Length: 241
Image 1 (cartoon, rainbow, N blue to C red):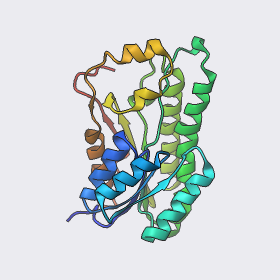
Image 2 (image 1 turned 90 degrees about the vertical axis):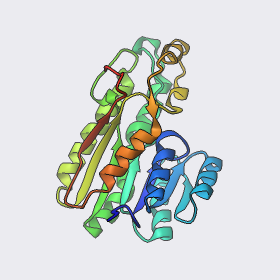
Image 3 (image 1 turned 120 degrees about the vertical axis):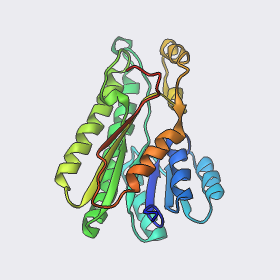
Image 4 (image 1 turned 45 degrees about the horizontal axis):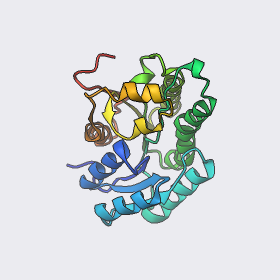
């Protein structure tokens, strides 16, 4: 029995990378997907490629009203929300001494506020139904802090803490899963504004495809309601940290 069939899932950051791969994977398994991101042209193209079980909503996850509209649009289109994949994130790495405060603010807005606003937008509906699943995409950086990643890791540690708090507050009703990817081939590095850091990361050649993370997300979502996968950490075989 395919437990993903007919589920309604919101996927943020769906215009590329892990979000796009996840939307394709879930739709291929029979789920209905609401695609959310800021790049509406990409969303429109992705929804068209998926077909009738996909819809899209231009969304800035750091905007509370946008996230509320996203949830409302999903309910209008599909009638319910079974799961949310809080995937949108940015990673403008730099040394703290580089003083890139604007990058810090952006990470806090997208990586923390975006997750919280996503939870806020769907949690009331899920609690009213007595069922739901929230998947928060964290990172290996939520476990290991490396130079240039202090603020990014801080945001991902926050995702871990928020997820655990949500799990304990909704135990028996809502399933909460944290997905922590290691190096993945996505556009995430494009958000780096520090030229030296960007060049150094360009030499890493062992990233795994986004589809590998999509498979992990689909696995967590596909299990029976009484089974909760609380965390999955996925690294390339060649990645040490």
